[in-house]
Length: 281
Image 1 (cartoon, one colour):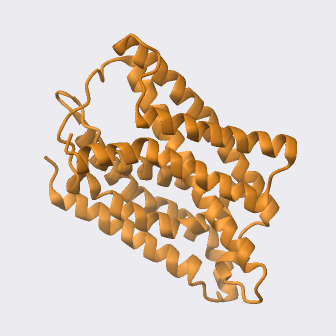
Image 2 (tube, one colour):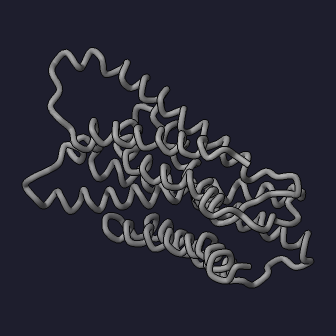
Image 3 (tube, one colour):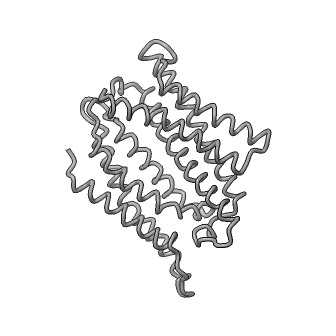
């Protein structure tokens, strides 16, 4: 059992990172000319500091998920894992110049991560997963987590685009929005993220079919999770087709992205929450 101090340390590190990015990105103040010389060193320092909560968070997940009798992957560990991968992807994206502007989202993401890192402690898994030794299941779980993380980023990206589009019609623009790329550039980035997430979601469904065949002897077992997963896949497929052949963009793309993401949340997180928290199964 992990010491509660480890959870508190990870929580405080995330909170400090969120406060730092909020102060320097969201509540932006004019910088003196001499600050430009220190920009590179500040960015390197931010990347280094971000490794502390990421490492602690990863250690917590490893210790709480991998147990002697199998994998403990309840709703707390599931949400915490998705948020950890989301932060990790965002941290890694900071090494690419085209994505540096999106580091502004680290502030709200770090605050969410500060809460998510405590979930394995607040909502511990009571029943280990069965058949976790099968390679098909391990591949299915890994690809599913990556797909969820990418679609989480896509949803945050879409929300930021919606705010930016709304603020463009108003005379006052916050420093955060001024420093973001143009809407067309952000839109291209959104669809790149959705394409990557869609490929991973497709792999998730295919690996789930293989896993179901190995364990239950049938390709698809009907459940709310399966139903919502295929509906979400269909929503994102329709969005990509609409983009390719009908030029869907702007508010239409944002609405379809958020709709698909919400359905995807209901597919796994929603199902696990109902089963484990409400029905205690």
